[in-house]
Image 1 (cartoon, rainbow, N blue to C red):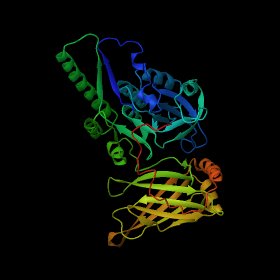
Image 2: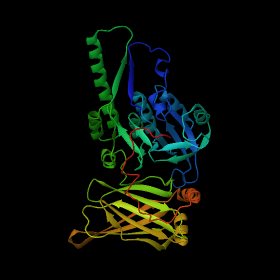
Image 3: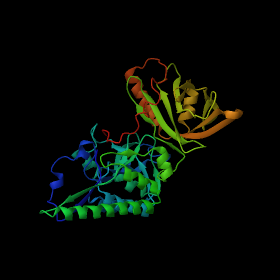
Image 4: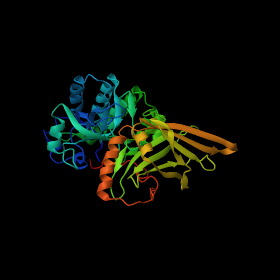
Length: 420
């Protein structure tokens, strides 16, 4: 895991001294220099009607802002989304890049870009970086699952005017560490005074930058409490309250889970109407069994509810067909499982949205009816991959109920870097 560092020098550093060995970022699956490139994926890869985006990934190095500025100057489409996947790096550079994104009114999201031409299991070897830095568009896939924007990357991120952190991605913060490099042997008292002054200046700069980006000072207050050695992953409630991602409903991308029982899944979070907390939900689609496709819905129970709720789903291509019923409660979750026929599958694959209507009994004989839509962009291509995975494992008929609710959510997005 890379942490952000302010490099301050009383004299020039020796050339190459900082790159004599493989950096922690590289060992964790990140390149030592911030990389930016154009990416192109399958239809709806980055949302409805979106198949092209800008990827920014790797460590924020001392020269990153110059490269980002030159690159973006050649991209006329200022609303092409920018997907960030970075462990952090140079704080001062992140401020410069953040202000640059603000001047473009940029759309920023946390997501991992996976170049299809690169060898499996790595995205940062010399051959892959050559492809990404060659210019032109790179054929790629995009995922929010375990994507991260940590440390100094967070300052870059909040510079954008439109910001989205998916429920299965992470935005993590911590306090800075000051690294001083001197030649000679300055007096300890002078070093201590200089360090104290620079730390105070750095904290003022951070406070001013966060305020200038329109983010609540609560974020700055939180950062001051998190030690440099740690990382705090911002909760959905904190993202909303601080003004980082103010969507009351947010969802990740459809993703394929392979193994002995392949399935497609999507995670979403929704703000509760009468409070600041968010409710986590997950949808799953399994391998076809005897001409029917098993579905599963799991969601956190509203603690204020009483009795059994109902959940119904319709696709906008055929609103006459419904699926759903009464979820079964297990611990703090409620889960509904069932199966749909080929016509319902066709309607879902031809739709942009899955319309959800949940009815929940409340105290005093009141009933809460919640309606929301689940984005189906990217689902058809995921289902084709699911069919291939199902054929390879020859899955046997099983109950689609998971042994443990939310296996993809309970562990949370990791603050450390996943393997790409």
